[in-house]
Amino acid sequence: QVQLVQSGAEVKKPGASVKVSCKASGYRFTDYYMHWVRQAPGQGLEWMGWINPNSGGTNSAQKFQGRVTMTRDTSISTAYMELSRLRSDDTALYYCARGYPFMDVWGQGTTVTVSS
Amino acid sequence: SYVLTQPPSVSVAPGQTARITCGGNNIGSKSVHWYQQRPGQAPVLVVYDDSDRPSGIPERFSGSNSGNTATLTISRVEAGDEADYYCQVWDSSSDHPVFGGGTKLTVL
Image (cartoon, rainbow over all chains, first blue to last red):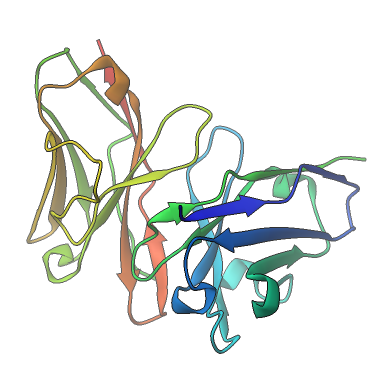
């Protein structure tokens, strides 16, 4: 079956970086955009960016430009999202989700906690 | 950037019909997608392209879109429908998705 499996929870200090992975299975990885969406505690969904796994092209929300890097490894059907210069307000649940123009499959989420 | 506006909360009694709106400038010219997020779970797509349902989503979930408002309608509401619901469109000018702020559906 189609699924996205994300890496485990992370605890980071302010100023550090975090890299979250998202392994796809059950479909051709290069056929679908991969998005990164985050959700702060008690808040709504916030789109961060997408990567086209076929071309490697990316697009990110303006507020994350310069801090977010999205990559992929097609040999292992895995997408990555790295967020740098972490702040306390980056504490959130981070999801990967496939699709264009809607997101039909979501990962289970990765909790990132930023705390000194 | 394109903005989507949802009411923060909607309440409905079991068996009744819930209507959750999503407002946006000329949203009727865009395709609207809806997600359900139950507490502690990842979002699930329940309606795409205004009114289509993915396989496995009950017929009780339907959608419409016209003018400046899109609507998700849930008929014969059940306790298990209690969740947050988000609308989403693709903003072609910036080439990325936009989410509404979400609506908490409470089943009384």
